[in-house]
Length: 221
Image 1: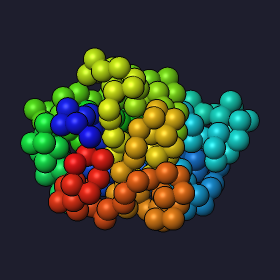
Image 2 (image 1 turned 90 degrees about the horizontal axis):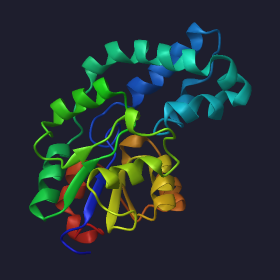
Image 3 (image 1 turned 60 degrees about the horizontal axis):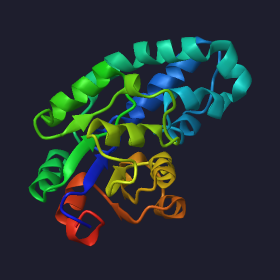
């Protein structure tokens, strides 16, 4: 792949270790509204946007009845947990390695703007990334491809530009497939290798740092 390729990086669960905080926040939000779902089922949907998650776990009726309020309560529950979030091993090193190879880097997040700001600060990424997205940029989140397409638009790149997604969930891989991008995945999403490969992942690594050390073996060589 050419040196001018675009690296589209998921943020939550890929670069910063937020997945379990998000799952707990959703669990508490559901409980506060009289709905209890096993937390493992919620975790399996993390990586899917909040606009999709409520119906995915509770059906369209639940979404129509209390979806908007659930999302508001999720933010209230998630905000205090964000102070516990840490950068995943080698995440900033991955960003720097991609830039050193001449790739443009865009951070594709459907997170709330203030959560994305926190991640950018943790990663010290504002002058490394070429662009980033938030939930304000899209109407439909992963596994829909919209977020990845908007990420390319942020760079002024066409939808068929040479781009590779780096993510952590089957939802990332599915979105990449729909957007026509190969997907490289880290295991921090908690999905099994077989699930990630079945979804279409072309390479799987333990951590962002492991990916940074093995870029020559990926479409981001």
